[in-house]
Structures are given as structure tokens and as C-alpha cells.
Image: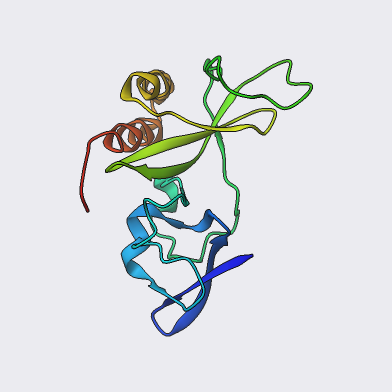
Length: 159
């Protein structure tokens, strides 16, 4: 089921069911909920997942993302042991895909190469991904910014 909201004077698609494919957490106040649709402000901690805030998309308005399921492979990271993989997953790798608000934190949602989604519930778990991003940084500052954005999610905030 599609989820729609008002952005300015336009009605836009922000997601499907719990997946806000076209809305980042930091954009939730830029839209107004439409009747019968998810409210990204009120429902932020009620099971919805937001698009990860990739730095090269900072200029994109809510509803304007072209690739609805964007991922970023993190070299050298494998999923935690407790991830329930899909059948035939023999070479697991990790990609960043979304964020989810839980108890005042904006936690990282990752995807295994088999398609299994899982959440990094603690800073200790997410720190490994942050370190791997920093290892990739070199001359590409976007990796460092991605690491900063992941880490920021693990600071408790009440916004």
C-alpha cells in the first residue's frame, strides 16, 4: 500500500507500508500527513523505516528520490551471527539501506546480500560499520560523512 503526504502544494509518495523509500528521517517535518496514510512525525517510532541520508542526496526533496531502494555495500563487513538469512546465502555481505527510530535513537538498517534486513541495535554493533566506512574514506569524504551520520543516530535525541 502506497503512503502519501503533502509537500508544499503537491501530494507526493513517501513510501510503501513501513518503508519510507522517498523520505529521510531528517525530512519528516517537511511533509504533512494525508488522511489514511502514515504520519512520518507521529509514527516515527512506530515501526516505520526511513531512507538512509546519503550525502550526495542532500539536495533531493521529499518524494524526489529516483532510486527507491538505494544501497551502499560496506566492504569487509559481514552480518551478525543472529541474522536470519534467506535460503542459499553462501557469501554474505552488508549494505546500508535505511534508518529506524527506536527509543530516541535513529538506528542503522542493513541488508545482507541475500536480501535479509536487520537492525544494528547498539552502538557497539554499529561502530564496526562506522569503522569500515572510515577505512574507505581516503580521498572520498562521502564515506566519512556516512560514518558521521550513522554514529549520530546512536546518540539519544527527543526530536
